[in-house]
Length: 296
Image (cartoon, rainbow, N blue to C red; front, side):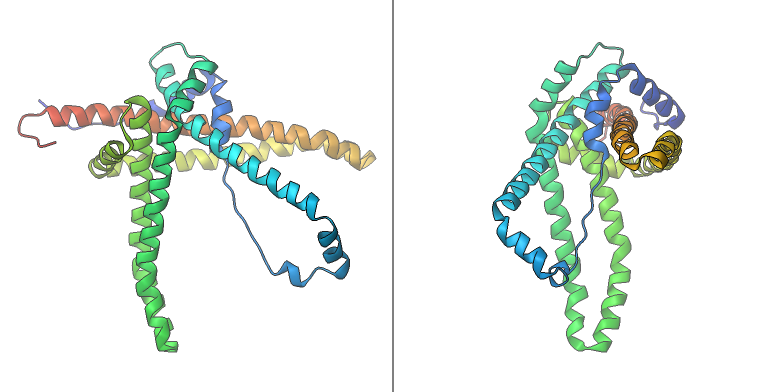
């Protein structure tokens, strides 16, 4: 007889902590999943002087090399992210079940699943773009009516904001579960998305609760990072008071190394939370499907 699922979130947190410290080489994969990025811009081209423009025009080759290097670095980070997702998801699952894992073994699993992980990412991006375009149309159309149209556009935008946020949550949960489907069950991308969407619908409350847990963990992590960097900075500030260059040369690499380690460990922890939750939900989903009278 099927019984409703109860999730012990504290147990998942504790098990995730054990995973993090049992195989610290997983932090390497976690590092490539932990960073975010942003960009900014402005009309800097109008503000630079003739000397700067002259330097740019006389160093085209150097700038080309720098741009190529930046693109290659970005592609390398994308590839490492794709490989790291599969490696980390598999490593977490195996470690939690008490199985022995190695860096080389997890790397191979990550490489094996990289294309399917990429496929999920591309479909996710396509879904976001389609929804954004669909939502932008009713917002932009009233703008042709002048000031009244602007007010109408703002009202429509406010009304559509919450549904868009709900869509982003649903898509995030769906892709999160689909990634684990392709890695842990070897499912193709489209079947994995179908299962991920089914899990999102059936376990929306439990998924949102885990999101809150990971959010609180992120806040705690931010405080740990700030405290660690402040404590770490003290000796280098003292060195910098005597020799600024020496303080920077010694302090910056060490600070980056600490960030690398902490970011990798935290990403491993968060991925553990979602992987262990997925496994509980997946077992329950199978049991629910096996219940007589249930249509899969």
